[in-house]
Image (cartoon, rainbow, N blue to C red):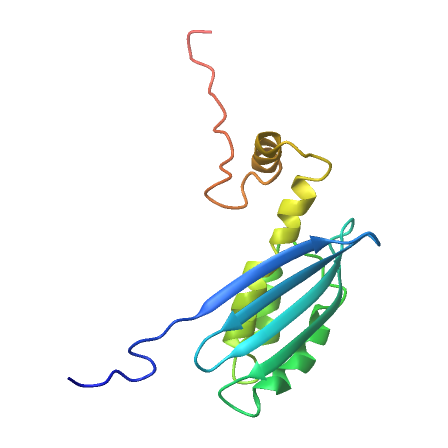
Length: 156
């Protein structure tokens, strides 16, 4: 039986964690682990303004010694507000030969969690929280559909 190579039997684990802190900031942490990577990304966001205050990454393991060079590009996120246009800004900062698709993907999964936190602020009942998130995040994805306006009939 032929042995499979590292990409023919591959597993990648990605984890996201959000922690609202007492100082009014949110610590977002993403990890990615696979045969070639062990990456920990941390982003600190102001909970009120949704502005990125800090960002850092630790490439504990990577396929190339130069992967860690992309860490300096995180500076482009400082001051960025999470919301419309974010995907475009992430592509500008982390796309192409000087960027890192893995880091960009981690950020695209991680940063929107702050929008959920903002939409659920002050609510402790889980169903009420889901309802509030649905209302406040309408139009952001297929799960939060905007209601279709009803047309008045010609008979009225």
